[in-house]
Image 1 (cartoon, rainbow, N blue to C red):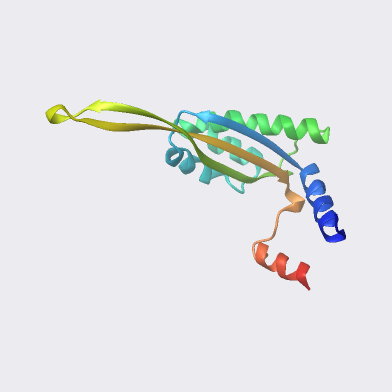
Image 2: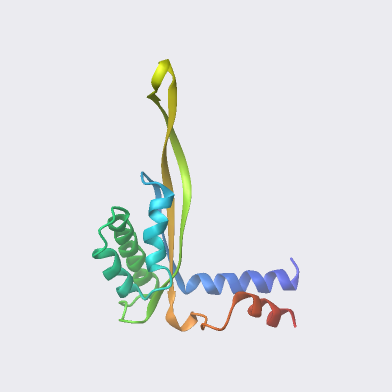
Amino acid sequence: MGVRKREAAEKRKENKKNTAVARLVNVPTSPRKMRVVADLVRGKEVMQAMNILKYNPKAPAARLEKLLQSAIVNWEAKSGDKIDEGKVYVKSINVDSARMLKRLRPAPQGRGYRVRKRSNHVTIILDDIANRPSKGESKKSEVKESAE
């Protein structure tokens, strides 16, 4: 393995040490409905995100709240200390499509319409707020700096 590859691998390992991950698999809600709620908490501080999810009337909010609690427990187990107010934020939350159950619904004149019951996978990543990029800083600028 080359030097550049090894350094990149070590950098990825260091970044993983500072993050906590939780996954929710095969949730029987359509990804489109789940993304609406997920977009509300992306980039927010953890306690603020918990409050948003707790008081949101949409059905996927309860599942996301439970997933966020799991990610918090993972963070505390990894770092060894409790989460303080304003110390950890939701770095990313991804909602991906999962398996689709295909059913038939009776339609006029002896036909059958296909009903696709969708489900999704959700991944949430928590990170230390000190590692959060500032508003003006973007990933493209980081790539350019590392290339120079």
